[in-house]
Length: 220
Image (cartoon, rainbow, N blue to C red; front, side, top):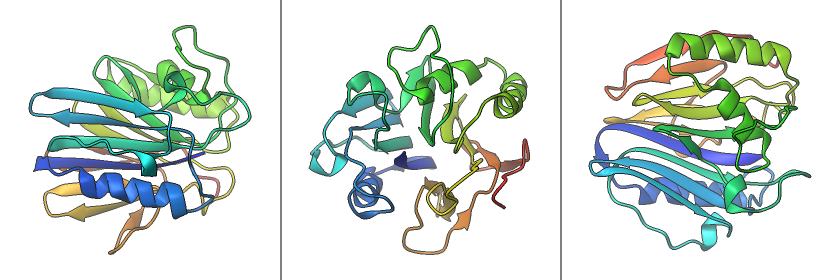
């Protein structure tokens, strides 16, 4: 169970506003506090940055350079995986990044470094081809029990956003909105108008958006 914020932009943007958005959700949002570590995966002009801490995000003083893509995640651990860097999102493999909100019944992937269902789901779904990934995702949803399969994945300079919830629709929500030359994705509705993402979408670096209807959301 987690909170997350993601941003993709045509031009470099200051990350502080969106890290503060995550801090507010983690400390005061739905089912707060989400205090069991946090992380950020950032794409800048000079390369990618992966930052993780085991303290609550609102206690962190970390700052980051202007970025094109931000994925930021605050964790609320379940009964299993302990608070540890290896269990902190986002998870990264090559130049792909992944952060998740939900609970999935899954066997630990042999390449997983931590003990979360999220990391094993990421490694199971990961593919070098977007069409193959889409097929894997549909099969995964059909063959695994889950409370929510809500995630943001950075793949080939695109953000893939998926929402499929089988319980607690109000908590397992994803919203997105356009802010100038940026698109912002968030687990909670912030200031200004936003649209809820019911199933899935892909956003590229030019802010082109494609909707995915891979599987039905049982709560809508």
